[in-house]
Image 1 (cartoon, rainbow, N blue to C red):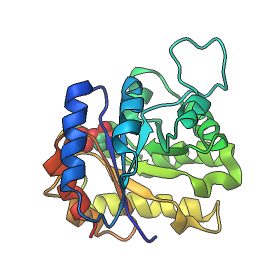
Image 2: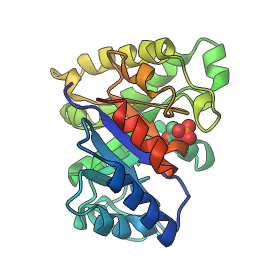
Image 3: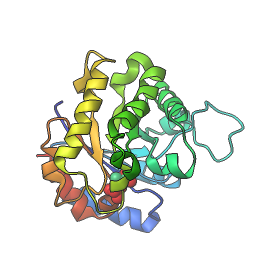
Image 4: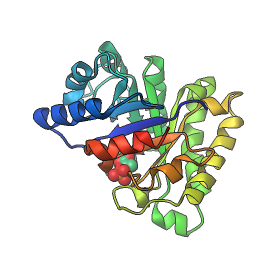
Length: 247
Ligand code: PEP
């Protein structure tokens, strides 16, 4: 793995004016980043990101994508629509979508496949709940979630990005320790190694209350190839410090 990847997930936050000042502050503070960077915004603001980020080192992505190609799926956004105006990434299987929208492993895998078919890189989120961790099921859960994607996309698995996001760490301020995160990342890497000859090509991001203070120690782990950042991606100084921690 050469360059790390830092991706922001704005979730359902933002507005035209706020997005513009946030992105401008990020671009002003960005020297020469040592990592890839992406911002994933709510669908109505993707065109705004496209315009604001044109010619910059920051890519942009969506927070979801439809598993369907086109047609009578009211409210959904297709991978072709995203690709139409240059979307690079699509988050799929975020725990908030699994939890609040009933997304199954199979649906997440179908979304990843649809994105890949259109040249949009899926950021596939996996992660265990606190209850599952306490029951000793972490490895089993993340492997099951990733296995569904491997099964569906086959040899294209080396084209995805994986984000390990323990559900208990998302938006809670409770971060996995670098050792806890590394342990799971190593499991995921081994699973990828059984499915592709180039497992190191796949970025495995850590997500879950990553911030300016804890980023460096997490990013120093051998199998942590970057971060998926929620809350801290809404504050330019914090996001810039996480980017700087990749140097
Ligand atoms: C996320 O939403 O993917 C996330 C990691 O959120 P936070 O950084 O706020 O925990």
